[in-house]
Length: 510
Image (cartoon, rainbow, N blue to C red):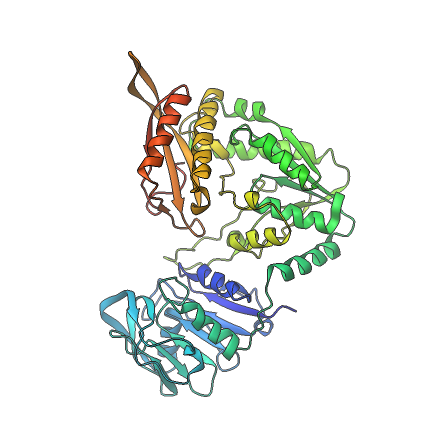
């Protein structure tokens, strides 16, 4: 049995980052809301309490019941978690004179303390709170301070209960991963056995036990998640996996043919269905972004269902759902994850498809999916592909969609993406693409006045897509790409570069 760590979420924007850091230590962990009843505490070796957008002094603040955890299991409180334990067990939390936010440095670290083993005085940490612990509970011992925060870290005597007012999970905390490792490995004795190899081995066995000789159908998108899911399933059940790759007419240039060829080389049982004309017909005249998404989702389900019905006795629908899509979120007002997010790679399972669902990647983060893909021997180029939206170019063509607009955008996108690859920039970027704007601009080509389309290039860096910063591409590169696009793509006479970050902007324009 894999040893597990439980992370109780109080609505912090950093909760998923805590989990990712724990997974980096080859330790399996799961996230649940602090008030969830969907876990059994006896299944875990240690517990971490997350931060929160709430003040512990607020009447609306989460109030977890720690009676089955504190003093019984190794426990680490982070920020809100630390302040909650201080206040709830006899200490005092007050509003800070100034908001304690940003970089700070540890001082007065307790010597010979396993929690800070390998962490030197002056180590940089990241603070993010407006309250501070002014008095520790009587049975606590101070472990570290900063210049502004006296009680930066402490522990409860005669317990494996620790608390810190900074965030070890963010990269600004230079020794944050080491501190988590000290707590989980040295103090909590959690085994570091969560590896891509172990995941593949246990998942393949589990799939074989669950699916037996049943037939499974999977909608491939050409992306990383569905490809890794298909490869795992193929390893488990072979030709009983039936993959369907639908061309919705909104893929990148030549992508339908190129991806199909890649899949054939991988030994997957794949059928390509070119439904581009059907999608474009249904989309004709629709310019509302949500309207376009609904049409694309609906038609995909109809096409997928038509094809699935051609396969006799299918019992399962497989999906490439990953962990951020299924994490329960805290239903507390004001939290960044206040809504439970549902997601299906095939646009949702319709009522008339009476299939059971199998999701082999539902416990993995995106970076883990790529590592599992590498273990499975999937080509590095395919694993390194940028995320691509489910509606494809349909939400990168602002306004209504026509065959000519798709052609223009495919040509421009190919020049941009290939240019990034040739310049060695592609793998340094989280996601890149082009938007076709619903405006024409005046230009001059030769001696003639033109009135043609404007395209916007977009390239962002991110870890998970939740936040993103625009990439500072070299001017020389942008100049070269702009010239190539304007000279090579009929219908475009102006190129702009999007320098907006998320938030407030989103990665896609629709």
